[in-house]
Length: 331
Image 1 (cartoon, rainbow, N blue to C red):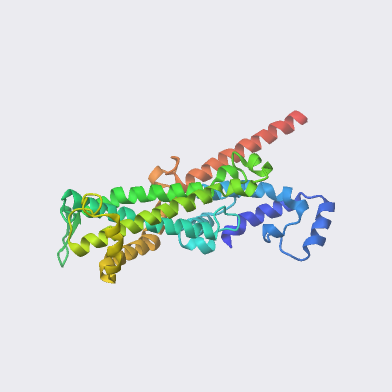
Image 2 (cartoon, rainbow, N blue to C red):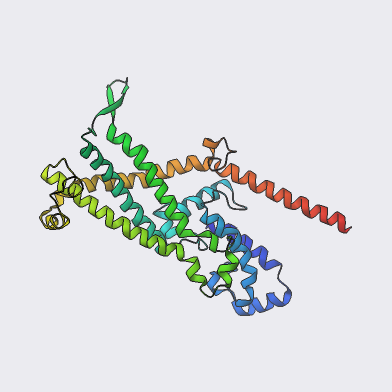
């Protein structure tokens, strides 16, 4: 409900500037419905009144904005999590958000498949190069009543740095392409997409592109998982078909029927890691970014909500100053 507060307030403000004639026609056509009912039910004569609301909110949603006009700190944090969390956002996103349920499901599936692919690529890289993924890079000793020794391996460092970095870039890229804010309300090419007879196709072009990309990622991830299972089952140190030229694609496909669930035990560990990252690490690290502490509350990208609030205040002060000058000139 708090994530809808901005849309509701903006809608009410827009409705108050309507002429009495428009208000009478709106009341007769809408009956006793709430002023913030679904946009699809808004009469045609209201369409121009609603467009400024979409132009304000849609670009912010597409850009994963930390702050929406008029929101408090708690309301902004809540709307940010509900609109951007990979799982919670599927059911709890704002009704004006450019990414709908179906698009979010596709993005989530692509993120999971890409994570599987990049994790197993790192594993295969260690095996193919003869490096030991369990080699200790550094350790942490905690002096307590019971001594505890934590070792950080080369494989873990590889996954946390290279793997996580590439995964994050992929997720943000897929999100930006699917949202495609340039052709939506408030975007750079909004007028062209609105005037085009293929308006919906232009706005959904990013979605079609993401579907193709996710399909390719799933195919690649499936192939890599089969390679990993085959190598673990046969104890190979060379990647079939890539390093081992004696193995053909037909041999790899034929070996699938001999696999058992135990051959894919590494997938169980990945599913647990993926769930922990979604519901523990994601809220924690995104809250840190939201706070803006990494950017000293002033730097772009890392400034978080304080930076966006300060930016909005400057914009509003500039507009109010312009209005005051205009009033003096008119006087």
